[in-house]
Image (cartoon, rainbow, N blue to C red; front, top):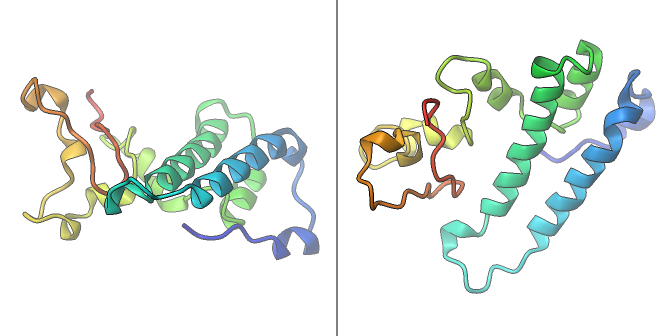
Length: 149
């Protein structure tokens, strides 16, 4: 995850409408700090970054919903948020494509990160899995992000 750039804000002021979304983004920033400082004792090695991934997903989803779904912010403010690291541009671009509306992270669709050269298990629809099987992604802890679930 890229760090939020603070030097950009001081040089050029934020665009119009920033005051409306700034408190929520500051809450996400605080949640991210808590997730980063969270103790990893008692967790598996792969579980430690999951809380950071979840906050990153929520923050990007918030910006995506504001711009594409609710149309509450304009393009300049959206670009400002992406440019300053408040949202993941590549993840938001995937959400706009059919079949990726509920994608949890970009690692889940990269075939090179899996043993068999396919996508992650969380991308498999729940109807195609065994009923008693608990699915949990090793990359981000997702329990299913297939679009037809």
